[in-house]
Length: 389
Ligand SMILES: *Cc1c(COP(=O)(O)O)cnc(C)c1O
Image 1 (cartoon, helix red, strand yellow):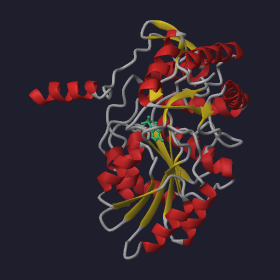
Image 2: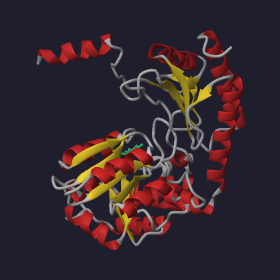
Image 3: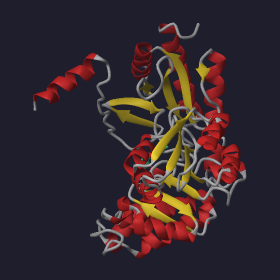
């Protein structure tokens, strides 16, 4: 096992070693990370729901009533009434016939892509798609064609060249997780119809965030009913854990029968399901949360730009602040932390060389004061490192 230490030291040498940050408190706007008080600009808890009283009491009540664990997979003894209620609520929220809950978003992508495609099929995948989509494609053994980011023209050429396959699947993030930009869904829908391809959208960062109901990218683009496979997570804006796929009754029935990550894993505990169910209720009752989220995102973005920073995309609460050089990005993130702001630096191989960035995410629960203090830290750190003048 000497390779372990050797490979680890190799990672350290190349500045690619990953370490865990320790959260000492809840995911609130101001929290304690690695023992240090800071403003949290990196959580996917977009609506602040992880500390919402209604979610907490729903989870508590579920534990009292149903216990702490599910005790089996959904197909054996782990299917509680709550799981079914949540799936009905998700289908209503997404405006689809049905929905199925997986244990994580990662497992939803893996299970869905592998259930729908095999060696006889071809998958067209955006080059910036999330790792869970990439892993799903690999595990499916389908031929995977990676198309240039959001490039509808290039994708159409690739679709034209594809012949002799049983099925075509186009798969894309709805909101790209490291860039915060949106998939060109209207164009993708058109191509999927023209070339008879299945279309799958990963709404991990769009669920609860985009659209007038917060129902995700189809809702945002007015394309409800046009995207047959809508995947998302319950672990980001929804404030709980789990993944889902929403679509036709047949699709959901098929996944329940074929998706191995659904079949061969113990169901989520009732408390997690109850929290997600409560979150859907809170989001519907309180659309102001989503408005506040977007207000905060616009505010932080516009002030950062005024200060001279380059923001890579302006369409979601994911705010990528371009630094460029990988080492400078690490220094920027470190300097921000010294100044009391937690926003991670993202470097290759996660993003292409030369596009290293500090990735800031806002939450509905940030106050003006939180954001102003964070902005002051960005200004100071940016000047110290010569990124802005
Ligand atoms: C976070 C994320 C996932 C995985 O969801 P989990 O519930 O965290 O497993 C999948 N796709 C994208 C685009 C994500 O950002």
